[in-house]
Amino acid sequence: MKLIKAGIIQFDIRRGDIESNLAGVKNRITTLAKQGIRLILLPEMWSTGFANKRLKELSDTTPRVLEDVCRVAKKRCLTIIGSLPEKGAKGIYNTAYVVDRNGSIAGIYRKIHLFSPTREDHYFEPGRQAVVSETSLGPIGLMICYDLRFPELCRSLALRGAKMVAVMAEWPAERLVHWEVLLRARAIENQLFILGANRCGQDDNLVYAGHSRIISPEGKVLARAGKRPAIISDTIDLSLIDKIRKQIPCLKERIPEAYV
Image (cartoon, rainbow, N blue to C red; front, side):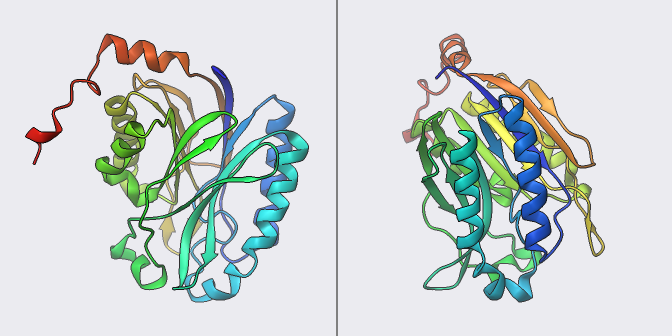
């Protein structure tokens, strides 16, 4: 599939209010599906927000939330990606799930890099494995928020065949410039499409940036949101990747042995 209509849902996540967040997302998904969108990206921890002191309790709801998303994906023939709290054997993970258009879970990625300045590493267990999800729309690499600051991760996804990388985030407004620059850098240096879904609004004193983006392999911003709730979309042309990589063959001309 060369042409993919992709959309991002940006909203103000209500901390700990799963029913409200889920209902809002399902309504917006319906809107996007009616527009012919086939790939939908949601922000980081979209069902619960960072209700850290209630994570164990809230993570119990994730299987039910996932079942609901799977039903919607199958009914609407959609691929839906977003991160949720996952209860694992060792603790809670910040986990991205890829639900494919047949309602199956096509990929699971546990956030590797936990943001220590906000003590995320005190509440979550880190993931240990980069993931490229094989979907009906093609291979999609997965990253969550702080992961964006680690170019090695995105490069590994590109080398493993990702044509698109989905970045889910709760990125603060005070570092908006970093968000915008890093999204474009990851797209340009890896010559692939970047979809960045960030939340907006405010949680206590922390204001979130919003400014979700769809970015081309050339670094062009194809779709952008502002600081308020929004739905953005554009058509991703996967054939552009080969064209750009032929023009500037930087991935082929890497010299890894010189970098150590």
